[in-house]
Length: 52
Ligand SMILES: [Zn+2]
Image (cartoon, rainbow, N blue to C red):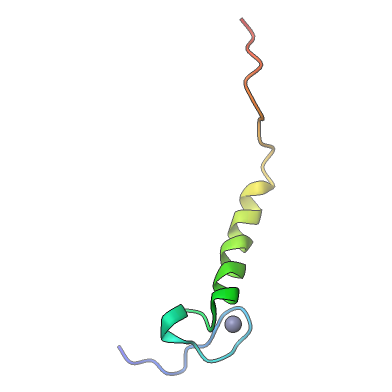
């Protein structure tokens, strides 16, 4: 496949192979944080208090 219309989904810049499918490590991290953030929305339980 040789798509050259692909662009960084974060900022829209040209994709860099080293950081594909993003343009830079920064954007790659951003994307990661994005979906991680969604997970964080779930009320996490710090520890099981133990009910028995
Ligand atoms: Zn980017």
